Image (cartoon, rainbow over all chains, first blue to last red; front, side, top):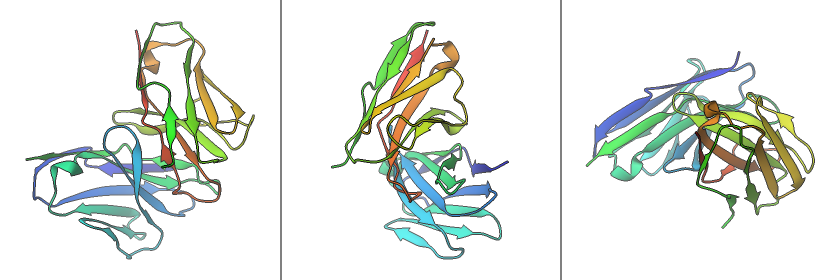
Length: 111
Length: 113
């Protein structure tokens, strides 16, 4: 059975800290791995990873895929209160790109 | 700015009521989706639609139905609301042929009392 497991489920840190969020997966046919950020209601797309070892970067956020370990990490450096959100990991299950989602990591950044 | 609009942000309904959740997108996307989101469980797919009048069951369709009479509108129907359907409901749309083009609505927090 395909599944996506994120850890930790919640995390509280102070502004300026660096955080690492994890996503582990088991899928029949790997196509890609997606990261989303959900601040208030609507998840918004962050990264899509397809190749192992290639880092995707956007400002203070970066992500990398390890196909050997069946996992991905999302790093956020110099965190700000605006980074507080739920971070979701998802993978397409089939050729129609239906997504299977992890439970998310709720990140709280304290000033 | 492209949008997926859900008609209600918060909704309180009584057990046994028929509930309609509306979703409209302005991106001319073929694919539309209804998810529910519960703490610790992530997003779970209820129903999706690839085109007008087409619908497919997702992982948890029981107790729900959908309607897609027009391309831009995808409605989720709770035939007889129950307390275990209290949840956040998210609508999304996506163009064909890509896994990352999902655009989500702002969600409807439904409470069934």
